[in-house]
Structure formats: C-alpha cells, structure tokens
Image (tube, rainbow, N blue to C red; front, side):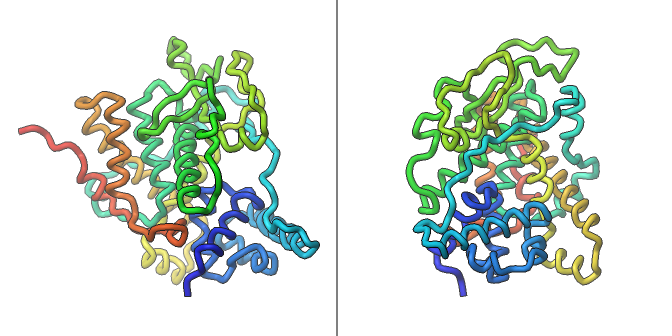
Length: 358
C-alpha cells in the first residue's frame, strides 16, 4: 500500500531539513526508503545502520541520517511541538582544494567519457530519476553555451539549476512552504546567467586562472552558482563580489555535483537484479554507473553538437530544456511521484539530433 502524501512530505522534510540531505537526493531516495518501511524519523531511528547504508551507499552519510532520526525522536518525546529540527545555520563551504592549483582542481573533476561507437549508445538504456538528468543536461549544454567556463563552474551552475527547480517544485506540491529564496530577492545585486532557461545567481571567482594560455576578460571570469536557500538560512544579506575571493558565500560545490552525477544512472532493474544474483562486486557496480553517466553525457553532447552551428548560445540553452522534457523518465505526479525512477533510452536523446540538410 502506498504511503499517504502527507507522510511523504514528513519524510522529505526530515531528510532535507533535519538530516541535511540535499533535496534532490532526498527525492531520489524516498521511494527506496518506503520500500523497506522506513517511512519517517521514528522508523529510521529504530533501523539497523546497514539497512540505511544499503540505500545511501555511504557509511558517514548513513550515520548522519540515523543520528538525525534519533535526535528528532528524542525532541518529540520531550514534548517538542516540531518533530523536524530547523535548518542548519552552518554555511556551505567550497571544495577543500587549498593546496591544489586551478589546473589540478579541474583535472580532479574530470567526468567519465565515452569513446565507443554511437551504435552502443543507441542500444543503451539507463534507469534514473529526473533530477540527475537535469544535472546531466545542464553540465553538457554549458560546454557549448558557456565554453569559457571551467568544468568546476559548469558543475556548480548545473547543480544550482537542479536545486532551484527542486525547491520550486517542492513549494508547488506542498512539500515546502512559503516563497523561495530567489522570490524573496536573496542574492540580489549579484551577477546572473541563464542555464536551461532559468536565471541563476552567481559569484565571480576572481583570480581563478585555470587556463594559463587564456587571457580572461571580466565577462569570462569563472563563476560559482550561489546557494540562495543556504544564503537565506544564514540570514546574511551583505555578501561582496570582491576580488579577495569567495569568502564565506554559500555555493553549490563542484565536488558534490560530480559525485551525485556519477552515482545516479543505474542499469534497468532487470540488469541490476542480475548483478545481485551474480554477486557483482560493489566496485564493479560503481564503475558501471560511472560508465552510464559518461554515455548519458556523450549523448547530450552529440545532440548539442548537431545544433551548435545553427543556433545561438541563448537559443541552444532554451532548446536544451525542451529536449530534457521530451526524454525525462515518466513518473507519477505530485508528492507520491517524487524520487521515483524510470527508464531513459539514450536513443530518445540521439533521435533529437539535427538531421543534415539534403
């Protein structure tokens, strides 16, 4: 029996607010939690850590979720009227690459590539939910619409799109309440760019010279995507776009976006079941998902390449969102459908490529 929509909202609020899981990840995992009857902080608090780790695939993150559930239940038992703790006041920090050069940072973020025949892409189907596919479309499209931006910036801006879309959708179906940080004007005065047709507030990364051969103009300065929701939670209205560096500004980090992308594209369920039967090592499953991510990105790149000489960067950006809508996995609507996965045949992406004029 399916979980009532209000209970799904409680579970999502717990994961996103109390356990401090990114909303996009929370949406992806809620269905898996429901399947094993982990429907809220009360049941999660009583669960074995291994059952949580089987879903989140990360020991540290699983312990964080279990501790948050126990804390939430303890507060509720003590008579706290709010079972879910308020958002964290901690600021999101940027990647810890203080000892690395910009070139080394970009190299460490390299994404998997696909060098095989396109026929292999045509026969490939991945199993995912919608948020990672938005992320993949944004990262791949930015390679052509903002080619002067380094990979770290493209990952950050792409994650900003996913976060903004998730927040807006959460409000529209009642999982979150009130206006978004963007609607309230947080980040006002900062530079903005458009990614997949959506305005994204940015932070200039003054002095970040990742390409020694390039003469960077002010319009080509590397960017971070600002985390406006985190900015609102910190309640700090004055953040400077200064040449002194990014300071304490909350950003969408490239590392977290990359990690999310590489784990998100599974084989279809029947193939995943076969792996379990054959007891495929976890390392092989991880490698397979990374290869799938490379295939997804390459398919989107081929689509963009077919149009890049025929559309302006602005038109290509807008078109990319419509392409995503046409190929995204088919899932249920409303709160009950959030986090649900579906199949995405890469042929559906490649079929959108521009046909050569006769």
